[in-house]
Length: 403
Image (cartoon, rainbow, N blue to C red; front, side, top):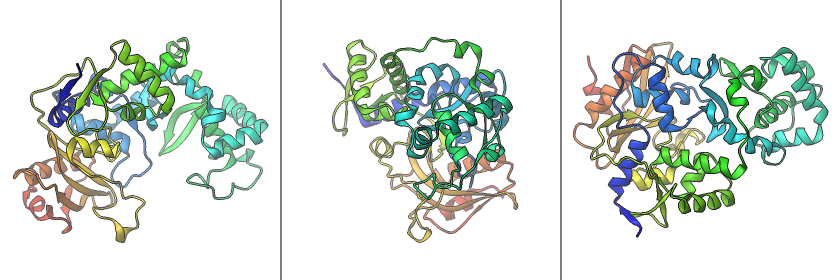
């Protein structure tokens, strides 16, 4: 008989799976705290927008509170490495032990990578080989370091990567194929090197699993991070192909790795992590990055929280409803507000460009949000929080800030 869950139960399961019922560490968060969060989220999505701070730094702050940013940087870019960059859910930082489960994706680079990367591999294989040889001789290197190999003009505009040089496209193809990886970053610029000079030897020597075994493991990790989810949400977590994911989900149901459930208000079947924890209550308080796993699948956020969320970065300013870089505010087990934030680093100010309450926001929302904004400003090294007049919650948040 299929188990039935209420929306509130599904919401608590989802938040527990993401680490929002785990106690925050006493003192300065360390590698153990980082590992615990990565064990919950599975990955951190990387994004280039830096109006507040880079997106991959925010999920740790949401779950741990103020932590030293070097903690994440060292785990990702210094030995002994615990994280590496690859295409997980978009560009991501992932635990190094998941690398073998992604080799099937690397093997499909010639057919599955994006157009510009795929074309240069098809049309100029010798050039790609030359780029790889340069990385082998001189890595770690950036695309700019190799522009002496760039013997033609930049490609014409063709999608979001129209301004990538041929060198950059070749490097990104090699990155997709797993022949190079990210050694470190210079600012936000990726420095490439060979995997054998970056990743732990124990990871590279792990036998490559069968494609279906690897995908089942990725789905197990996905449901562990989601708690309860639809088939679409499970496959979206690591961007698995539709047909493959459907077959693997059926196999996991058959062997007990996924438990079919019916969730109130959800269309179609859902699947429960057999090890999921259903807490009686969630007492979280957190600002969530636009690319946090709790909200990155917008239809899921709407079904779980009644929270309609769109990222308006690419919307012309006059047409934006809530703002450029809007963070949802989690209080308890509900998303109760949203704030458009900007770090004005030259002035040392966290600017709240707009603040909006959700219809069911509790009376203490402004005070709780003000406290979280103050903590965020301190973590970012900013000395003050300023609240603009836009949004129905703005006056109350301004009043609740410490003098």
